[in-house]
Image 1: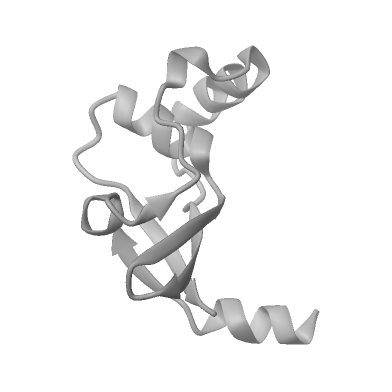
Image 2: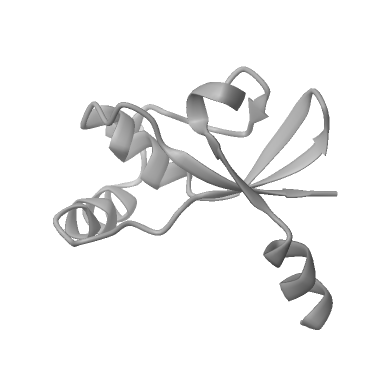
Length: 90
C-alpha cells in the first residue's frame, strides 16, 4: 500500500487532449457503455466535482487508462472542453 501511495503521490495532471492519441484502452462512446455505468455517471455529473481519471505512463508514446473511462466518455458527451487526467509513471 505504501509503495502505491508513493507512486500515485508523485503523479501529475495532463489534459486529455494532450495525450488522447497515445492513450490506449479508452472507449469514448458513452451511449454504448453499460447502462449502470451511464446511470452512475449521470448521478455524478450533477455534483460539485467528479473524480479525476488516472492513467499510467508506460513510456513517451504509451499511456494506459487505469480508471475513469466512463467519466471521460461522459464529460466528452457533455462537451467539456478538456478533461484533466492524473498520470503516474512506470
